[in-house]
Image (cartoon, rainbow, N blue to C red; front, side, top):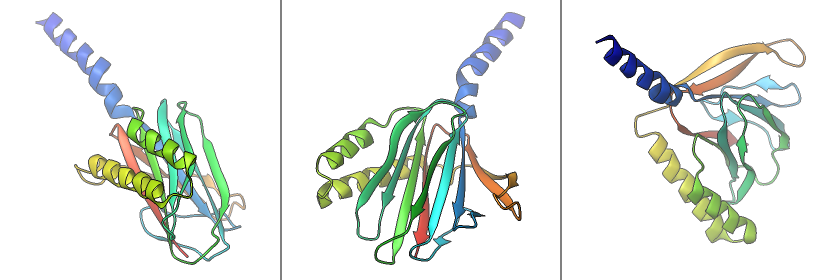
Length: 189
């Protein structure tokens, strides 16, 4: 009986536990003051204002960061694997152009998203094609629908120290418990 219990527990630890432990953190800071902003609601900013964000996966993963702007254009900021514990910084990025809604999509996955990568490559080959922008956006929406079939992924706000001016607390959002996430960050300016 002890052998059966040991085999079962070994299987649980070796197979199921790694699937449960994929997690990643994102920190979003806006303006010259680097104000920490929760990404769970619409971020309101002014045209010309800047923002930056960092992403840190706990384990090796694939990271895709794509902006879909108010003119329905796609801008790919990142589409490469990340090593566990490696922090990647985006920005500062400036909100220019026509005021409207910009959506920043962060897609984190344990597995390579081949269809998305193929559509990104087609977009790179012809970046002015509205059809290619729409195809990338549709694939992101499909991935988002697939990832959210069980509801909103678990996330937690984690105190991570003071801002650069040390006047306010900076918060990081941690996602865990799934093997793929699509996190939209909606910015209105």
